[in-house]
View 1: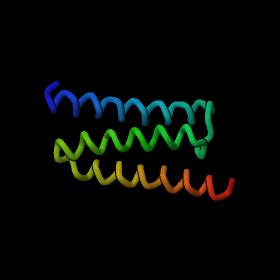
View 2: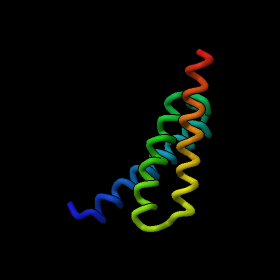
View 3: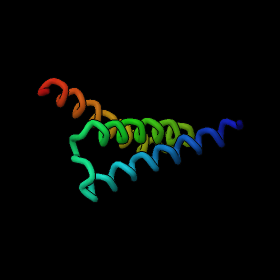
View 4: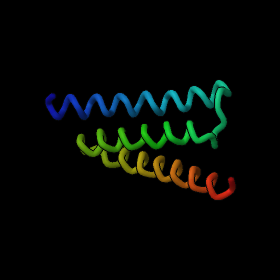
Length: 82
């Protein structure tokens, strides 16, 4: 598979993961601190970082790196309090 196509597929997977997470929280199917929500954010953000770095969209890359950091922080905090 051509690298550009692979990067595009990864980007679409990331977008779908973030939109799914947002939709599930908005519909009250899961809580904002649920591990499933945070995992979707982590995977989605990571996929979008791959895509945005490839295309040189560095402001978006930074936003997604922060998104990943929030997910990791929330998951680690939840494990500490469990």
